Image 1 (cartoon, rainbow, N blue to C red):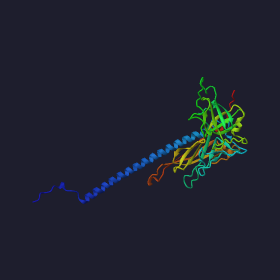
Image 2: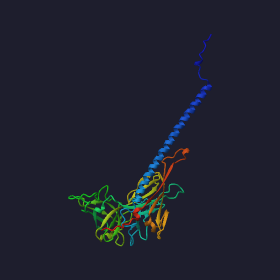
Image 3: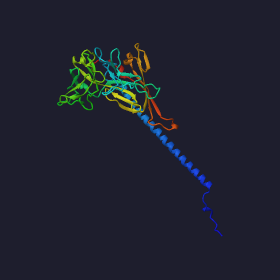
Image 4: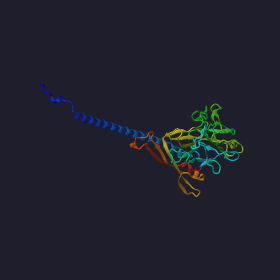
Length: 375
């Protein structure tokens, strides 16, 4: 006689095992889906935060530079004439000492506006000079602004020219510029960080009304115990601003005469989108220096301008205002500055994310006139 089996010692039936496995798979699949959704949500939030940071940084920098257009240059409202006549060739911008970057379609350099001779305006529109990121999109825009370097105190130096290719900067002893008995300027002209370097632009003016813009072609050197410095402005400059031939007007040749010559370093800053690295990048170039990346994955830049026509009528939102109206631009509209996420999302998130920002900047220094008499 066999002993009676205890009911609790029996195993699972096939049906019970199948049901248990099915429930287990369902729980694991649900947990996996929840985890995947959480990872995707985190990726989306992280990339959106990165896009917002990039856009904020890029917008802040652009707004700062654009709002500074013409600062410290109110004595020359709108801009200053450049070399012209005789054997002169038209000056360009968008180049460093090795190559040109604008327009990005040809990398040939962009001729500075001509009205009727070359002119360095404090704001220079660049419709269609940037890269085309997507087929059918059209080329993106660029913008160039010019203002005085208010931190480099070149006004503490008197300027003279030993030739039309070399300027001498002598430390002045006026209050605030030197500390007797040993003159110690705020910045030496040959300082590695602050000083005049190859590619820098300098505006010279003298008491006789002479005015010229030159590009430094060799780093300034100390030739007089921190009180006398020299800088070269030879004809080899990449932006074609110097052109020291005697039959050219508007060059440093005219600075050989006259007295009371003063100098200020100009900051000519250009923003544009480049795609040569494979990633659409917002670039920032200062003078004739090498451009630097400001923000990656910037896929669009569209800029318009509010200006006045010859009759004084406001002509808003122009993408390419006539050259004759450039010095009447009073507001810059960054209509689109668009960022794209670094990585595409899943099919459920429909590929790349994008964010677009827009803002307007008033050019207070472009319209400022000093109406206060000095007694």
